[in-house]
Image 1 (cartoon, rainbow, N blue to C red):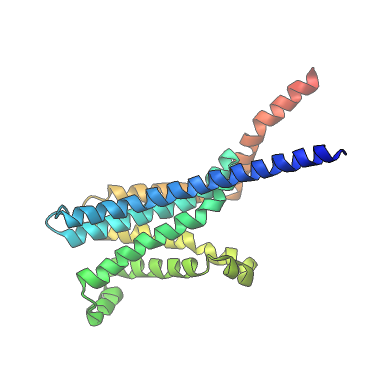
Image 2 (cartoon, rainbow, N blue to C red; image 1 turned 90 degrees about the vertical axis):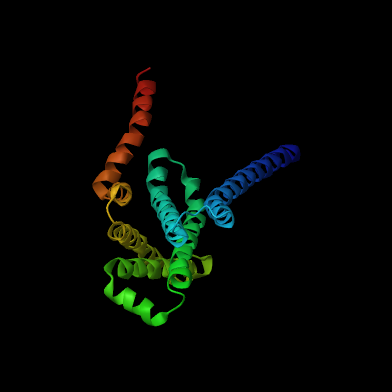
Length: 231
């Protein structure tokens, strides 16, 4: 093969790699901006006294709500990949998951610092005796373990056990929705919507559903191949 041809192909490869890198960098920047916007809006509202009659309750609700939204988004990554064939979306799952943990840590910290003023005796009593706080604390502990072990180093150390450990996100999500449901006083529409969406996302992981999706995606390709063969 002529040297100029090798050089041209090498240059095309680096241009393509650079383009992919730019797209991924832009996508990650968009995730950062989108994920931090609710927190920035909450801070702006707090600075201007626009959090309503019970600002602590508003902060608790908003941080918990956005934490659940982002947690649900991480669960949606695998179904989206299987349905669309967009495999690179997996590279953004860790970042979205860490932002979910960030908001839920803000939620828990608001309870500890602003609601209870670090009165540990009452906090421990709350965790032990109030079911919605018990399940919420359990969900946060699970997510803490997942956040700590989300690095490449931990992936190498744990090997196949890493994937088993990170399946705890399903349990954490269920506990988070249950915490939300038990916490609301009357209007349970939002936690029930979360429950329905998360339930649907978990159903897509069942082997029968996965086979159905695979056949649906392979269908157009198989039909196109048959038409070509018949010509």
